[in-house]
Length: 319
Image (cartoon, rainbow, N blue to C red):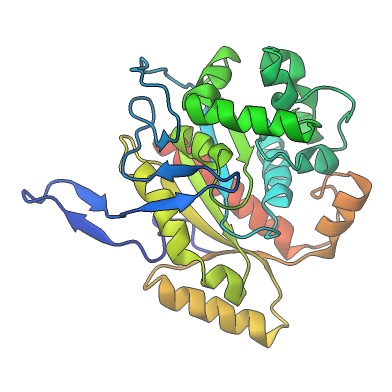
């Protein structure tokens, strides 16, 4: 696997330049429906100034807020591609490299709680935000010394209230992360829900690095255009996040998987894809809430996670 800075490139991105040829821009027109029924205007997006404009936004001119840690958002259009598993493994892997890590779950499914085996009775960022609970009091211990901020159990009215709130408060996430007072030595790994939703755009609005997670199948290949549309406004902001594409759970014994990998490579032009191999140890780790990197047996997937961690560290040191 190549570890150069141009290891990844966003698939299907249409780039044009302004009349003076100075500023590349990704063009996207129209709107995409949110999972919760609202719609978002995808034309504008800046990290700490103008944010994506949501329905019922209250007009305001928020002051920029500086984030000190490096923020990594794991995203996908398709569900079930292994974002939470990767978020867990990357958090443990970075800690094993001596890095300070906070794993944040922005998915109302609350999956990271199961992966890390943290206390499910304690409040998470979902219900805690509605009660104005400081996130620092919600931190729990994760694998290898990382810290975990689970989404927490929420009922339907709480989810609906939080979605409406986040649609009106585009700086909700940056304010909470800033309040944690994390240092530049920290990395925040954010697990997001699949598809187009307020949680995804909150994460993208603050991300320094975006890991686009897909599996080698036709469903993921067929959503690359939707992915481009979701990312477009965030790639226009300054500074724009660096995007990396990860093909997850590749089975090299499957002719179909290898064929789909070739199809992704064609869509990716001359750029290589990063791959994380399928490993039953990772599934077993979820079942028993154990660290997937604890196994001593040879594992291509664990080696792949190590490569991704080194890439994140390299990106951070050269930022």
